[in-house]
Length: 131
Image (cartoon, rainbow, N blue to C red):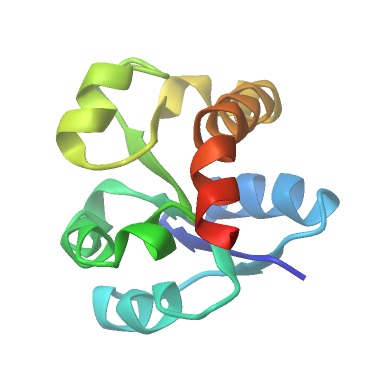
């Protein structure tokens, strides 16, 4: 079962994300602090990380992963101020996608779109790596 690490202290947001991801077959892990999050993101079967603003320090650790490992993980950043799916800001921040908290009710639609885009973007990369 693939793992998702949800780095968000707001229990309501955490629950909303977990409920949907569990319905897709993810095992959801929710660290209570940065140190715990750092231990979880290094697990081999983690394929999705959602980072709340209070956990932004772990992005540095994710960026230090070898390229082949980094591309196995989809990283979302939650924001109060940046627009959902702002690809330029996501690139600058070192994540794959941004989700504005105002759009959290649309998470299933946003996730499906983002996941399809991610698969399309990295399909060739993954094929080359596995050869």
